[in-house]
Length: 193
Image 1 (cartoon, rainbow, N blue to C red):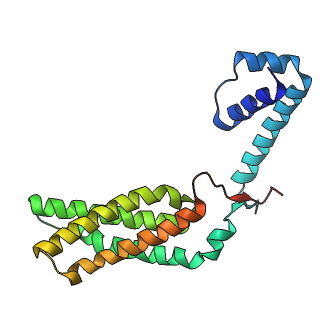
Image 2 (image 1 turned 135 degrees about the vertical axis):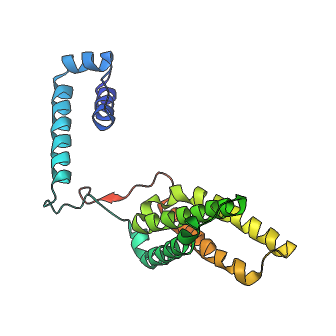
Image 3 (image 1 turned 180 degrees about the vertical axis):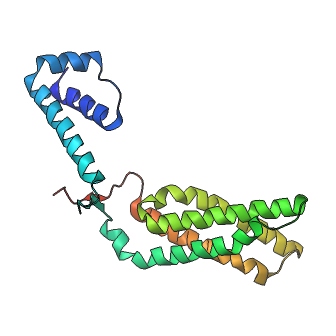
C-alpha cells in the first residue's frame, strides 16, 4: 500500500469513524512517516473539537461565500415569505372540527407551515438552499396546479389564490440561493489560505 492511500484511509476513519483496514494497519506499522502523520491528524482533530466546543474561542470556523453576502437581501425576502406562510397556516392546523374536509385543510396547512419553516431555515443557513429546492419546487408546483384547476372550474377566485404568490416568490429566492451554493460547493474556511 502506498502512503497516500494509507493517509486517505486514516483521514476517512478520523472524519467518519470506524476501523482501519488490515492493510492500512500493516502499512502504518511499517511506515514511520505515516505513523507520525496519523498522530498529527488525531492531535489536530482533538484540538479542532476542543476549539469548536469552547464558547469563548471566538473562532469562526467557516464564513459564507461572497455570492451569499451579495444576495443578503434575498435572505430577508425568504424569511418574510417563511414567516407569512407559517402565520397564515398555523391557525388552520389547529382548527376545531372533524370530518374529511377539516382533515384535508389541516394537511394542507401542515404543508404550508413546513414550507415556511424550510424558508426560514434557508434564510438562516443559505448554504443549505440547494438541498431544499426539490422539496419546495415539488410542493409549490403541486399547489400551483391545484390552484389553476380550482380557478378553471370556478371553485376559487384569483384574489383567494393570489396568496400562493408568496410560495412562488419564496421558491424563486430559494432557487437563486441554491444556484449560488450549487452541488458540492463548500463554504470557505478562515483557516485556509
